[in-house]
Image (cartoon, rainbow, N blue to C red):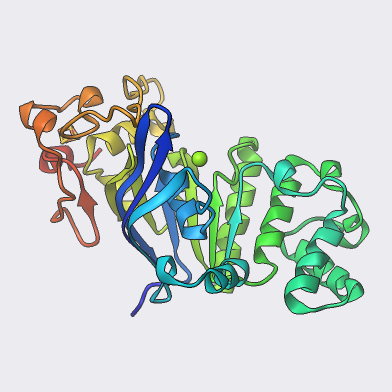
Length: 328
Ligand code: SF4
Ligand code: MG
């Protein structure tokens, strides 16, 4: 059937004083209802910019979509009218950010902010909106929701604030939620709780979920598929289990080796040497070649296409994926 969201060959550019930055360079991915896609990458890999293009919050220059399609339930958002896009963005998609404190309004109670969503979009009274707010706060397991509904954002802990952000995102029961580093600011235990909650709600509401992160450790248990991004491209795309068991790209392999594992205690963690490229000067050929332990001459001259053949629903942008593949 038609995927909920189908991003095809997306290109996004930024005009800077020093030249044009190709922030997203031919990215394709899809998410079905009830599924979680993790998008993994270092900062500057294009993972957030892709999401912002999907949400339609790139319309303000200097970001510019220069190619591709963004199909939502088969409808191309890049060709939809402004009103149509706004309606879809408001009602059917929601985004959760890393920093709840700057996304929530500090001068209004969380109850008022939640109630406002229902007033504006559902025409509810303040009082009914408040009742719905309490219900939602319960839903995201904020203890004593009824007593806390009139509290202000700063009165909540970081983890509880992130739950309030999730409640805001859920309010209109969107078909798609994009969460951009939703737990990065939290400590490890709270991270896991928030991630579990998101995953559970996604199942319950049959939503599509895109989880953007730089941390492979947080997505293993919650994602169905992973797209690994590097320098504005997807370099590996696979079902989560396959990717963990047998990565088909040296970059993914490096990332996996950097995640601490109990059964590897004592072994030195392999950290990928070097830094991601400056997007104004992306290396020719394979953009990962300056950091890649397997790089050969062809890697410097020929950009690798997304090869398939390593398994169902898998692809890797590495000329030497066959040599890379294998049990870890
Ligand atoms: Fe490394 Fe070459 Fe594969 Fe790029 S194409 S990841 S440089 S082996
Ligand atoms: Mg980001």
